[in-house]
Image (cartoon, rainbow, N blue to C red):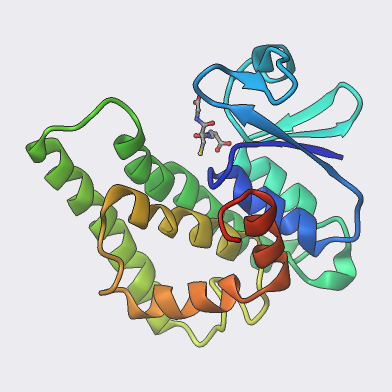
Length: 203
Ligand SMILES: N[C@@H](CCC(=O)N[C@@H](CS)C(=O)NCC(=O)O)C(=O)O
C-alpha cells in the first residue's frame, strides 16, 4: 500500500493506523500548495480531488476520504480489534468518524484557508469550542477508555490529529480535560510516535 500524505495533515490519522496493522506501506509526501508529489508528479493525476489522504491499495487502485480509508485500514487485521467487524459497535465508530470529519475537521479547516479577520477568527474559535465541548462531555459521560469502547481505534487517531491543530491556530485546548487525557494515551502509542517522527513533526 502507499499513503499520499502531508506532514501533520489529516492523513496523519491514516498513517497512524497503517503503523498499527501488519502491512508494508510506502509514504509519498504531497506539497499541498503546488499539488506535486515529492518526486514532482502532478498529484491531480493520482487523486483528482487534490487533497490528502489518498491510499493506493494496489497499483492504480486509489481510495480517498478519511471516513473510507480509516475503517478500511482498521479492519485489515481483525485480531487487532481496531474496529468492530459489524453491528452497532462499528456504526458507533462511523458515527464518530462522520462527526469528526464533517464537523470538527471543517471547523479547524476554516483557519487554514484565506487569512481571517479578528471577527472571523473569534467565530472560528467559538465553533471549534462548541464542538470540542460536546466531545469532551461525551467522553466524560461514557465509561469507555476511548471514544467508542475500551479499545483504541481510528476515531481516536482522527481526534488526536485534529486537536493537534489547536497549537497551529493558537487555540487553547486546556479546558478539555477528557479530550486531553484521551489524546495523551493516543500520543504515547508507538504507532503515533513513529508516524509523527516519520512526518518530521517530532525529533
Ligand atoms: N473530504 C476529505 C478532506 C481531506 C482534506 O481536507 N485534506 C486537507 C488536509 S487535512 C488537504 O489536503 N487540503 C489541501 C487541498 O484541499 O488542496 C477527507 O476527509 O479525506
